[in-house]
Length: 195
View 1 (cartoon, rainbow, N blue to C red):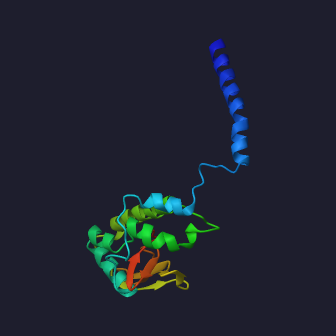
View 2 (tube, rainbow, N blue to C red; view 1 turned 135 degrees about the vertical axis):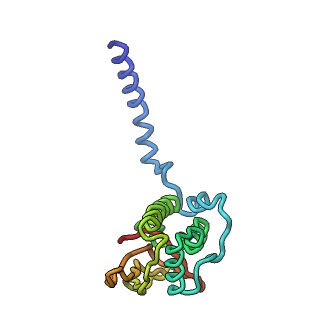
View 3 (cartoon, rainbow, N blue to C red; view 1 turned 90 degrees about the horizontal axis):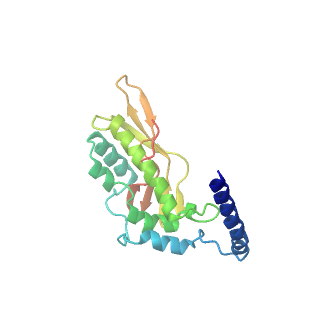
């Protein structure tokens, strides 16, 4: 018992001795966890190919939705991947223009990519499990709201794709996140979905 009390006292003493240094660092304006946006982006790009244009994708929003539905019907993950924003495209083309990477949001590229990638993984797994490998009976799509311009990028969505059920009902479903258009190429940003 005495050993535990001595250890606790030593820990408190060390913590107290460090407190002025932590307070001083905070008042000096030195905070290690804050990295300037340009440096955070440089670090995020390490190991990624430099990308100047969207690769794969489709030549229009209509063609993108048709290609996505066809790939989903075939459960073709390779085709779906070609239609989806890659990490390198995110790093070089999407994030530098994104409002979410600037004040007041100020999301770092690594955090923003992590969130988008997690949504995509979960959404694609769900879409393949519940809609993959079967006829979809696509009855068109509609993107909500106005298009948003962020530099050379244009974003639409969320978008809903309507399908015709076996009973003949038209059912709107959100199969993916936003659609990104840039220089005549269109891709899906994430596979975040609701159905």
